[in-house]
Image (cartoon, rainbow, N blue to C red; front, side, top):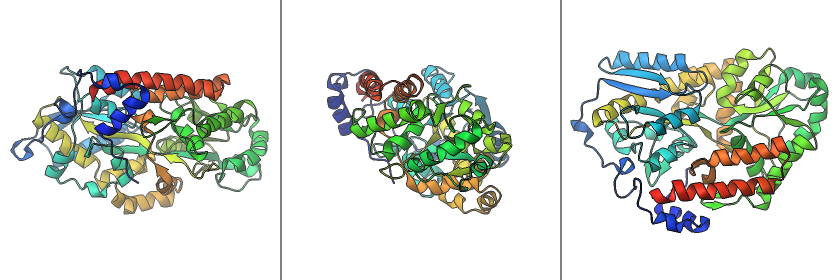
Length: 449
């Protein structure tokens, strides 16, 4: 499945739908067609010599700092004339992105930066990153070997603005020991109806609602796709907001009832990763967490961990892609960009992506890596790691209201927090989110196109 091609016509359509056509006439900011970093002309890379030093900003997804340091050592062994400086630019994708935004127009920008599912489009709109087609051709990067869904997640107007790196989906994690004590089959529930049937037995074992839900920004609005798409809803259809669609509201009501009426799910506390910590400690019987959490959960849990596809809804299976790619900053010199491209090619090659997947639980982004001897060994010793790769066949790209409208994820997560934490009517919560998304589009997207 590929990402729908975005275009100026599509953005104009959103302007009309959201009442933002006046903002589209604004001339401030970079334009995709009239200059700026996003429209940087193709460079004759054959005449460029790579810089001897570049900087990579990362949050080390999946506690991967040691792995990233290893890839730098491997790269520098093959390219002794280039030094890669790894910087911890934040504890999560949002902090890295905010720091990158603050560095715009200064000498402090990195050469390579994490580009998460909800941030890369803003980088592109602001002219902060370059399209990679010309550089990929010059460096002979085999882009056809990338998983097509993961690669095309970064597509806009016929160009790609990042390469996939730490890519993930949500998984259903369950405590196999609790499942056994509850007399349940050793597998994830196939549907949410089936989970509801199992929940009383699970609750009796753990003494609390069995399903732990995380509500942090960049998480709540991501797992909600499973309930929403699974019931036929959506945040948007291309640029048309659908937060008032009956199926979307039905999904919100379903989750609200799971927590407040049926009491078989509960939000967890303890910061961004509280739901992972609670599950790993055996407090909850199951949770939905990223594939990137697999390594940490397996290390911390004192019980047998099971993984499965996210349960189906009445409309069928529903699972989004997510995680982060890596982009190259437009403000750097061609020499720095070429060196950055060389490292990015190396970082995403089959050997590195298989090793990274083995060490973190993130999916290998190269199709050739999936069946590599290294991944075969991983799947044999850790069969849970195969779940995400198999589930990828059921995924789809995310709704534009979350990924392409700045802070869209934040506004949607706030709505879900109100539903889950405050028992708010989904219609009220999503109406407020729609108003915020409309304003964000007018202020942050329309004027720059």
